Image (cartoon, rainbow, N blue to C red; front, side, top):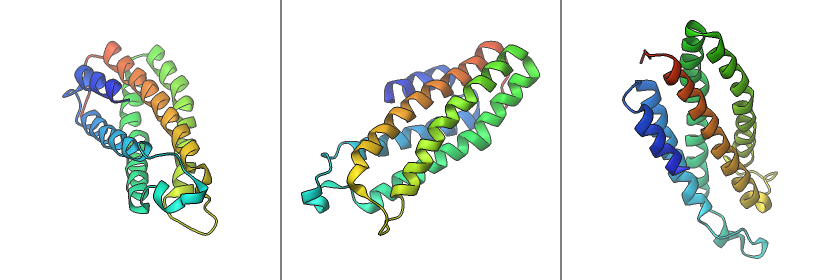
Length: 161
């Protein structure tokens, strides 16, 4: 994940304020994810020592929601509108990638719903599995997002901030 982020920054850094801010949020999200994922697997017998602190989970979920929101409400709109202005091929690709990106949004929203706020209904027995599935979904999402950004930059000379 981090290698992909570095590559994205090298390719597109400085070209758009929105994309720069979004990549910065991506970095914060990756760092927070890695902190949670570095913990040992959940053990039902020793719950207190195995799960991350609730404030760490909540902090990660907040970063996750901020990242998703920035993508959906700022960056994607900018990229899709540029693609609509500048070519049907780019617009078609953007329209094809968006549903694939949205699939990871569903996984992220479910993770947030399950773990952001503790309740009696929450079962942390699948936390490691759910975190791993989320990590894979994020990895896939980052690749799709980068493909979308690459299409914009490859086919369109100007990008607004």
